[in-house]
Image 1 (tube, helix red, strand yellow):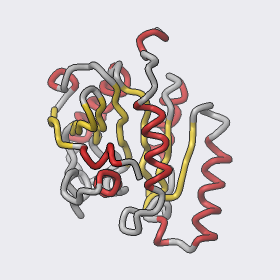
Image 2 (tube, helix red, strand yellow; image 1 turned 120 degrees about the vertical axis):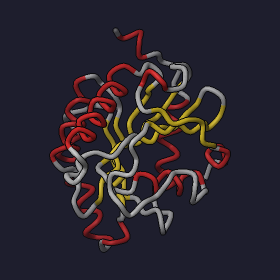
Image 3 (spheres, helix red, strand yellow; image 1 turned 180 degrees about the vertical axis):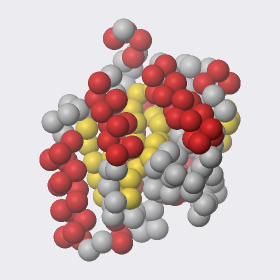
Length: 206
């Protein structure tokens, strides 16, 4: 595995885009339903169990959390969505912040969508995928907790997701992933490297 992600460090937390780090360089964001395994995936990627806060309580990630891979290169842990027990006002604020970030952040190069392989791509995930397809934002899906299924069952879910989604977004990909078993980290690194090394400016497409 590439060592570049092992040097990743916490940079800043922001309640909204206005207080985020300067919109320069390149970023890849991690999104997903509450408790899908976003923080665990980030920690497995960087080889540091405590970099992104992991909680058994859904809805704990309430801020935009920025991590610096190298100068000008960042990973962003977005607030989890879709947890019904979060107060309605807080849920609405998170959703506005997520929409604002995805719609306006010029340094954003791609989205890692984290979803539990046992309950893949729910309604909220599908809404996010449709939005990404509409703005031509590349998406890579991590089917997390793949160790919970047998090998054959996991591959069947992966093929189903690829078959259903690949026609909607020309830059869509998916993989099996397990943070405890470190399954799929090399594939994730390949996608991150591709996006973080891409010099295209999203603003040029506007």
